[in-house]
Image (cartoon, rainbow, N blue to C red):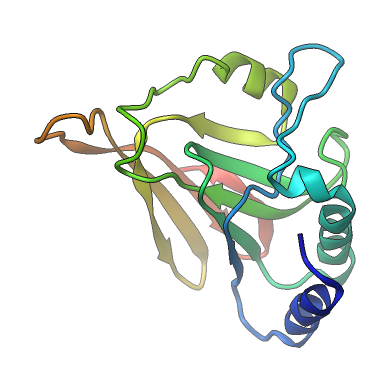
Length: 183
């Protein structure tokens, strides 16, 4: 996912950062998403799961170096997610090292669904997922010294004009406390 030079640049940036909120904007989901029910695991290889060694290095770096409030902002996967990021995603004892907010586009591919067909499987197989939704919309963020708030704004339909906007879910990350909490 990252070349050696890019990874070094990112880690050096974190090491020298004096920012309260350290944001990584990027295009594909960092958290793994197991799409298979049961003991077998199936992941999209077009996301960070396809580069597991790079993801593990990033998570271990965040766990050991502890930059202030690491937040990953992700798009380009056609669904909404809030994920706790961990060194070992499937170990409940593994500490949360960062939070990932994934947003989708407002107009692509039809109306979307509040609960996609794989909703139950995603939540059952991925204990680090705090929110998963398939509706069209966007994510609005408010950042203060004390917290980062993410409001998932959705429209019920895009296939005809006039859809009302509403907030489907809201989450906050408190300063100094990794992990998203429902607001």
